[in-house]
Length: 131
Image (cartoon, rainbow, N blue to C red):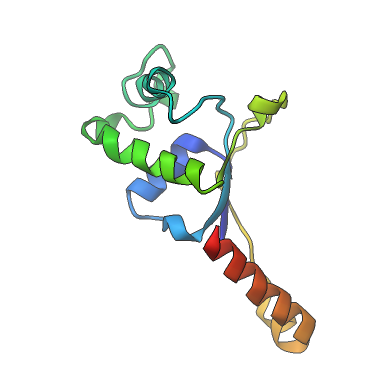
C-alpha cells in the first residue's frame, strides 16, 4: 500500500503503470484545486504538461501531452474515492519532499508472531482496498 507525496509524480507513475491505483491509500498533494472544475484543471494541466509559467523542472507531464483525458481521469478517480488530500485547502503548506512514495506495510515476522497484528493488518488491507 502506498502513500504519495506529489500529485504530478504520483499520477505520472500511475499513468505509466509503475504503480497500480488500487495500491494507493492516499496522495497528499501540495496543490490546491478542484479536479472537477474545468478552469482549475486547465491551470494544473498547463503547469504540468505545457510548461504554463512553471519552470521546466515542474513540467513532468510534457512528454504525455496527448493524454490529458487519461491524466484527469486518474486524478478524478483519486478525488472521488477520497484518496486525494490537499492540505493547502485547509491552510497548511507542506514542504516539498525529495521522494514521492511511502510504503505502508506490516513486517512479515510481526504478522506471523502476533495474531492481533495479523488481524489488524488484514483489516487495514481490506479497508484500504474498499476506499
